[in-house]
Image (cartoon, rainbow, N blue to C red):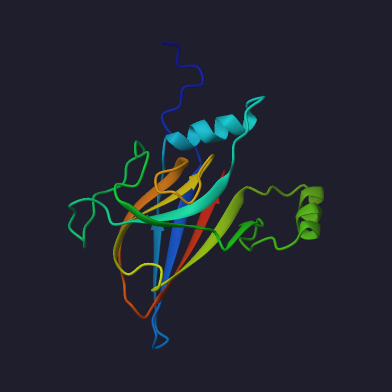
Length: 185
């Protein structure tokens, strides 16, 4: 097969999760993890450019408990992942913003237009999602973002990225998940 335009990976497309576990006593645990952009995300990206195809962008963050894994040492994610192993909860983002070249979120259409007119590239987005203990508690071992035709149903849509990382969600905490997707640097 001709290797023209065949990719081994998705180039510079990458992402990073920041988890903030806010406890009732005011203490905050913070973790920053690089995720894996999965192969199915290429299909979604291609469909955004295909004529006559309607594709939805990023829509939901899903949480899972994984398989029969060591809860302190889940297996490493791979780009071949298409679904969470054991999805237990998903939620739309609280916010989704473009990111300025200086790393701060763009908060208005006017600001977006001014940056575009200046010639500076906008090549990143940031999502924020909040989870309360009323929504999920216990071991959370996998995280995935879904788009395309995703809805609130487990395993619906196209998996865009995947991360395995152990978080034990107490019954009195809030989990804030910030995700940044970098298109290119």
